[in-house]
Length: 184
Ligand SMILES: [Fe+2]
Image 1: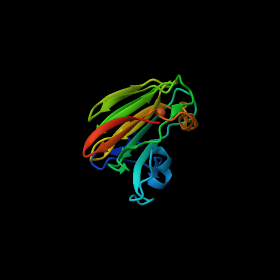
Image 2: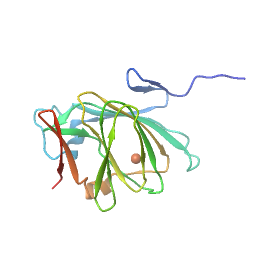
Image 3: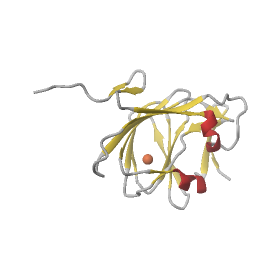
């Protein structure tokens, strides 16, 4: 019997996934400005907002699953907590699982009418995302928020739909206190 190393290995201490075929993408403040209510001129454009590690599986049948890790930096933009871009799935039949491995935050979920709710994320929390809901991560803490994700390869990311109907709430940190505000 042949025994091999795993294709991907997560370094839990460093909060990163290593492996030949892992795709790593970085989101800088310059790329993320439109996610926030206001621009923050004190933040350099090259500030790292979050990193996404994606382990793609073979695209040979629709039941295949991808695995990923999102690492969100503890950065605020004009007092607004760091958020991911957020998306609906192109195929609403495809659900997703998030597992928080480090940090604290919120998983923001929005239905097709723009109604939002959130689940608290903390180390070990497991979140089932219904494929019909848009989802976005919010780092509310002063340290990194690390979230493992598993989703079907055919889920697809519909970012346009969220641009046309933005999340209806925003999360701010003012004097160390988290406040939720309607997005208008
Ligand atoms: Fe997703």
